[in-house]
Length: 329
Image 1: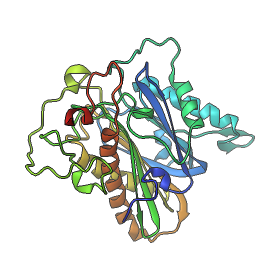
Image 2: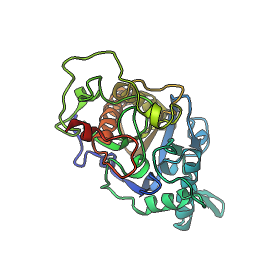
Image 3: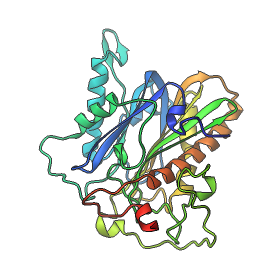
Image 4: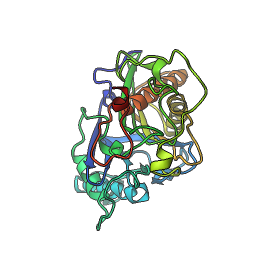
């Protein structure tokens, strides 16, 4: 397995990602979409999720595909980003046909970034406009770090961010996209090595390597002091061009959560809404037995994407936590 040419989730052919952010708000939105509806499901392993339209993604529900997936900051306010995306898709003539009507299917998940130093005293909810802007910006190439849904994200000790990574396995593409805002930490006790260090390809997140003196001890959380112990959540999408039905997509999402647990300690806590969407563009027939390796590849991509998100974070005025790179100087 090797990364795709972009080392982004858009190495899965047909997918596009767009970001929009508001630096005064210190928040933003990320949208994953495609030219045609795609199969999707979801797995929630955290204790405090915030979602929209995720019930439709269960294998026994009738919706055959989705038009976009939304990751947003803003806590429950950010769920309105999906409405902006939905309205824009409807204007394009996209959506699930019901006789003469068309209804875009846009599941969404949110993270809590309301106490990160940004100005949250808005009048009109800003997230529908951010959702529309993110959809309009959707492309194969997109930025990582303090952008989109990762704009105001934070980890236990450092700024979080938006990350992505990909792998190609015997011609099948797998990728991950993640907004990293956990209660836990992505680095070891030394503060100089990623928990996901063993899975790095090249120097995609700094080449810091594996901690030579590993320890099970966790450093005290700075986020709990400056933000809120309850204000967390890591939300992600894993995707593939392998042809999967909704039940298989659900299993892919479940497997991908292993990557979150390898990269963030602790993960899946009662104060995190940890969630993974899984998407299939249905382009390639694969042996059903290959699903196990697809799940493994998705988990590796998600671990790497989490580390890349934190590595690519950049400082902005008013931040309540530093970036990891600032502490390594």
